[in-house]
Length: 314
Picture (cartoon, helix red, strand yellow):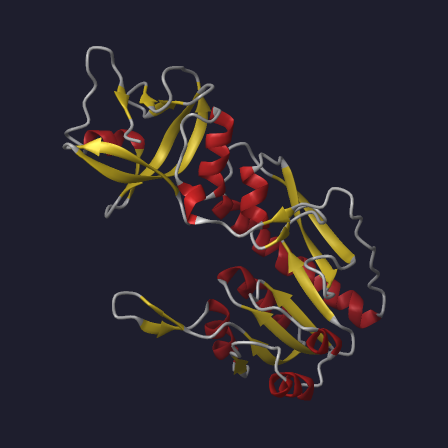
């Protein structure tokens, strides 16, 4: 089939690779335009952009698809289907209607739960124990289209968003490959979504990343793993008389109690409003990732007094 692929981050790259390796003709790749990055602010191409260039596929980076000119260019691709994976731009109706068989989207949740921008992170932050990846037919509503295929998967009690992301992008690539094969045979069927249980996965906000130790331990733990590795949940610890920002990248629920924000032991177990969380992987501002004991040993001014406790700066 003639396919237009639309995606931007590394999550989308395995799906593009699967489509190419399956022998489909990818006539164009649409991705977000290069952005300044790094100290030199040099323009950096998206992971999908780089992958497409490696395959020798023409790349298009429009800032919007709302204009008649861009819509006319898109129509000229004469695609059988468009495959969309974390593209990042709104597709207006003329774009959705241009491919002969419509637009298929790979979405990382069990729709209708977690429609929107951050489904994997929101599922973990909410304490969900199961999620999945779905192939759906796109329509004008936000992730409201009928679903064709789904692959469910468990969310482990300590699984991070990064681990779920890596698993889901591999499973999702295979799922989209199967969907396209069925579409080509004329056997791909769709089931309308129910509106019951619909939840919106809103974009992550910077203010959400600061840990509030007065929250229950389970909620703190879910925040840490839901924001790991990026943007990373964080707190401040007083080191040498100054507050230093620490990212908490891995944690587990632990025994212990105390005033919220109190460090309970030398394994970096911290009391929460209800219960405690043990930090197993942290990153001090400007430093590399390390386990908690290594972090404490390397932070000379973090000492435990007679009570064996130290309070995290708030």
